[in-house]
Length: 92
Image 1 (cartoon, rainbow, N blue to C red):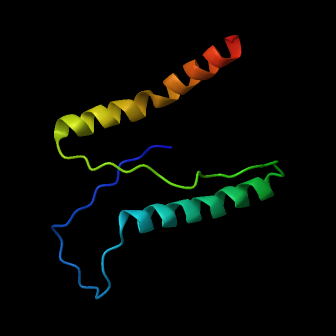
Image 2: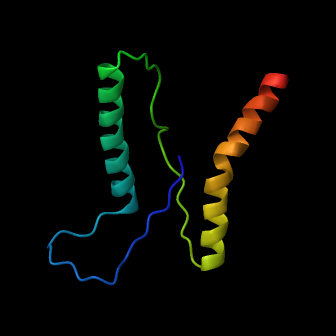
C-alpha cells in the first residue's frame, strides 16, 4: 500500500500534547486497519494466514510539486505494474 500524508503546520494547536510523529500516524493506521481487517475476515469466515502489514515503512519527504506529481503517478500505476510482475513470474 502506498499513500501520501499531508502535514499542515499552519494551524496552532490548542492541545498541550505534541503533534504525532509520522511513525505514530502510521502505527495507528496499521493498528486500526488490522482490527477492521480481522473483523471482516471473522464475519465472512475467510482464511487469513500470515501478516497483514510488513514490519516497517519507507518514508520520503516530498519537497516540491514535481516530486509530488511523480509519486502520485507511481502510486496510480503501481497496481498495473504489480500485475505485470506477477504475469512475468508465472510465465517463468
